[in-house]
Length: 312
Figure 1: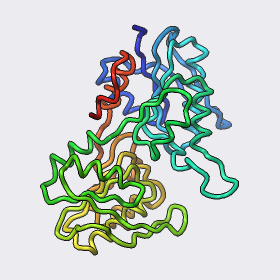
Figure 2 (figure 1 turned 135 degrees about the vertical axis):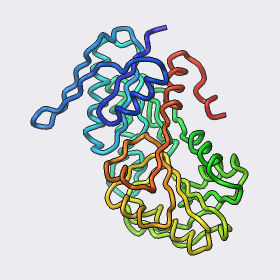
Figure 3 (figure 1 turned 135 degrees about the horizontal axis):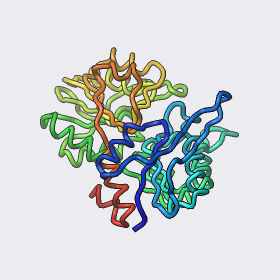
C-alpha cells in the first residue's frame, strides 16, 4: 500500500486534526499563506512522491479563497508526483447553483467540479451534497457521505417516542422520510414559498404535529430564514417543542440572531464548517463531530474497502 497522508487548507484545520487522531497519523506539513496583494501561496513541506494524498478543505466562507486554496494544493500535489490525490470536501460550496433557474446564468456547481478535476484530483469525498446529482458533474469517482448516522444517534439518545420529523420544504422530503423511517416516527412537511433569494415564508404544515416534539431536518442552515419560519409555523400548529438538525452550519448574515430569537430550543449541527465566534456564543447551537465518519471513509478509500457499507 502507498502511504496515506492527510493535508489541510485553512478552512477547517480542527476537523483535519481530529480525523488524523482517529486514523492514527500526523497532519501533513503544508504552508498555505496569502501575499499582501491577496494571492494565495501554497508550499508542501514534506515529500509526497508516490503517496496516497488526501487534502481536506471545506469551501465555506470566504468561499472563493478556500476554493482557490484547494485547487492550488491539489496542483502542488500533482506536480510533486503524488500517487493519488483525493479532495475531501466536507462542505461543497456552490452546490445550490446546480441548475439554470433563469436565462443566462451559470451552473456554478458544475464549473467548480470541472476546476477540481482539472487541477488534478483523482477522487472526491464530500458530505451531504445539496443535490445528489452533483456527483454526475464529476468525471472522477465521488463518495457522497451522510451525517445521518451521527445525527440519528443524537436523536435516539435525547428524544422520546412522541417526536415527528419535519421537512422544511418539499425538496427535503426524501431526507426527512429516511430519518422518520429509521426512527419509527411520523413525518410532516412545511409548505414553503420563497419570494426572493435567501428569503423564505412558511405557509402551512402538512401532517400532525400537535402536542409532539417537532425535529426539523435540513442539509444546511444559511441565513436561518427557512428554519425559523418553519419553527414558528410548527409552534402555531401546536407542536410542544421545536428542535432542528442540519449537517452544514453555513450561518451567514443574521442567522444567529434569528435562531436565538426563534422558537427553536436547540439547533444540532456538525463540524463540516467551523462555527464563527458569534455562533459559538449562541447557547442554542450544539455541534456534533463527523471526524470519525470521515476518518473511517478515508481509511476505507485508502485500503480499497467499501465506503457505502458505512450507511447500510
